[in-house]
Length: 426
Length: 102
Image (cartoon, rainbow over all chains, first blue to last red; front, side, top):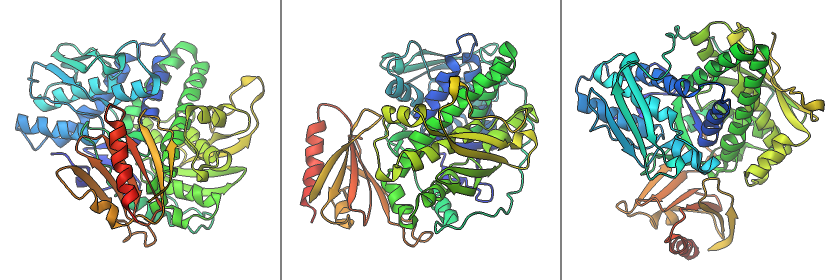
């Protein structure tokens, strides 16, 4: 059976690697928002990208994890328990053979999460699970991924009673990506940080080791959201493949459109996941005793961030008007370089939106008063007038020795021009 | 004893309350859910890393009809209830347990 406890968190780099794949924490808001942002561009055929990205990382991981276990039933059991441990829901692979088969389930993170967030959908939305099953079928039976077909024929997000996935053999009906290069990590620097009473290293260690109980549906309800621990390079692949498609269609403007969508996904992540953390009993139990000022809150949530597998964030400065955060080995940069080499523009969108979002929560949203994290509050905080906006001042994917985000308080931009996320250079 | 029951927004369309109690939560609350055939209790003690931290816990019945989050020493717990025909009865039962605490 799979257990995350068998894979120790790397506190030197703040990453969790399982079977060669880095795993990160996100919630159903971020997962569904990011997917919907990509799907909303209807002029791009995104389904093969979404399925292929999941198949790619799952196949790579399981090829590694299953290597020493030739027994098919045992392989299936490990895959089922991995899926559940990630908070993805429940799957039963007993009816699947090397020719494929059908997987039926009433619990899928994306299907349930989508319905909770957006209501009834027009079509199936569990592309991640579809790709997961494709990658799993190939890995369990030692088949080439390019010879697997997978599709979802029913989805709870549409109002159906269950999700149905159909697997088979034949030329892949999803994108097969170019192989990734080896991971290159950069040593974490000894940066001067402002003094704080917050013991960030201890909090990071405590949070990384904190159990996230999985419920009977294979979901992880925590901090008021459904949490998942899934593949950093799934998020990376769907984001950058989409951005490249947009660039092919619209040139530089395509990059701008993609960037604004992904930075907003970072806001969503900050508001719901990090906001949910900061109003939780777990926060009050592990972190609150050390917090005296809003700057301490910023250091506190940085400690939690560093426990999520996102890389190592350091606070260079923080005040009511702005903050500078330096991140070593942010998962976006590390993944981008593996997939596409050195970037010609800043691509660390999650951290750009994420750190601006944290500043909004702490300095404008009075998160210490435990406000309700409603969609209306999100709109007020992120789509109103004054707000913190993030800017990449360095990006590891471009060859810089780290990624750095400057978040500053700004008035609403005139004429709707997006100021946030301007790249380090172009 | 419950001092205040505040309904909290829940984005998963469940019913969620933050119950402020008359005294700090202690082991007596966990004792109410000690039947391991009926409840799954997850306790996390990080005091070896954070001496001033509190022991956190999560309690869930096998049927998943509610979820309690809290920490020993805090003066509140949050309870999230799944919506359904038995929700009011489930809520009443948990509130009765909290009310019985000192």
